[in-house]
Image (cartoon, rainbow, N blue to C red; front, side, top):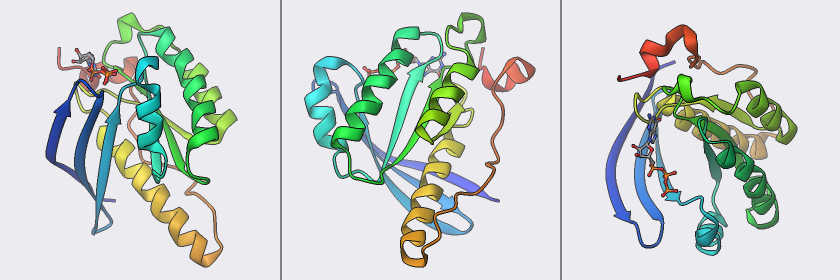
Length: 178
Ligand SMILES: Nc1nc2c(ncn2[C@@H]2O[C@H](COP(=O)(O)OP(=O)(O)OP(=O)(O)O)[C@@H](O)[C@H]2O)c(=O)[nH]1
């Protein structure tokens, strides 16, 4: 499968805690344009964040593998999404900063368990080295496409596997830029 993503626009607005980007994902020759709203995870931005994800087709929940609090916070967001997001919204859990293995506080197994409990996919990523970043966006886009297709065809099966790189001690070099 050939996957290519391209970042074409970025507007930064720190006072609101919202960052808007357009990301183009190429899935099996089909160009999918994603409108990505990067919202802050802090409690003080909760009202505005909730307003932005209401109506979204997909939500990526990101925690920091070196910060236990950020992982605990994911539970609150899961609850908030259940209460406020559109029914059937695709969710994806990401454990970011996997290039910082030495400072890891959240084990992969913990996150895997949480993701399983909520029936969602989970990957570890590194925004620094780009590890699994394209894959994460593509996976979410693919799941959204599958869901919208399955609504028409009545087939709600997700693919049984995703072609992701593992981000652990075995390939720290690949995850880390140093
Ligand atoms: N080593 C490493 N550092 C990262 C990674 N991703 C982000 N950072 C660093 O972590 C810090 C916070 O990154 P942000 O992108 O501002 O994090 P955020 O969670 O979006 O922050 P808010 O939107 O303010 O909640 C910055 O210094 C980044 O350079 C990563 O994958 N690896």
